[in-house]
Amino acid sequence: MDYYFLLFAIMAVGAGIFTITVRDALPSALGLLTVFIALAALYLHLNAPLIAIFQVSIYAGAILVLVVFVIMLLITPDEELESRQKNISYRTLGAILGVYLSVLLVIGIKGIDQIIVQKGLPDGFGHPSLIGTLFFKKYILHFEMASVLLLVALIAAIYLAKKKNI
Amino acid sequence: MAGINEYIILACILFGLGVIGFLTRRNALILFMSVELMLNSINLMLVTFSASRADMGGQVMVLFIFAVAAAEVAVGLAILICLFKHMKSVDINKFDLLKW
Image 1 (cartoon, rainbow over the protein chains, first blue to last red):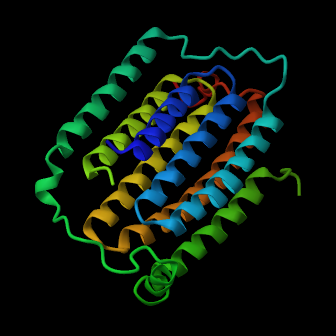
Image 2: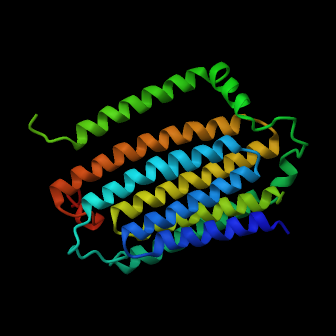
Image 3: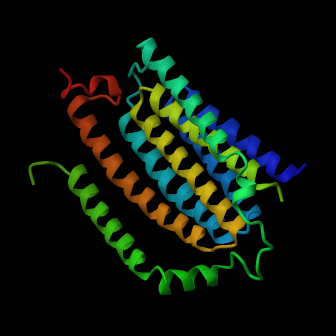
């Protein structure tokens, strides 16, 4: 059995359960950080070093810091916020739907080995220079669209968060 | 290297956890983090398929998902700040203006 995979998989699942069950938002964000780090370790195992670096720097570094900033801005200390849905039907229905969906996914993907051709990875697979070449040759249009999307999101975020009487 | 099935099952479990968190919690910030969990499970699945098919396109797709996730977080948190200014709360059960 692969102990590297097992270690980080258990870490990711445990931290994921912690993320969705803990009462306050800030410990939840820290659990999410643990999930991100465990997934970065698994990406290294899957021949994707650049993705692992971006996972740590973008997700754990930038996105999570933004989330923690907003938690700091929004949660007032005396606010009463129950940890789960008060309506019991929402709670049970949501849990049943989630379990059902994950079981369905696992059943649907069982036997994926027959579909996918397992072949030896070519030399230098996952090297950042290969990703750069793909980005600026084959996927150049998508790259430009992603940059426009980020610009639009930036403008929208500033517009939404500013004071309304300007 | 663990087989592809183990990675797929791990990604499915993480996606299911994200769905459960999204459907059962009331704090809008935790709903947000559940969405991030789901996006990450999909990233793991893309990288797994990329390695199993020896095709770098999957890893490039993950980078695009990073960009989309960054845009989603920026806009979503701005909307959340707006909602908090109006309602003085992040409890999603209080956002019922469109309900009748």
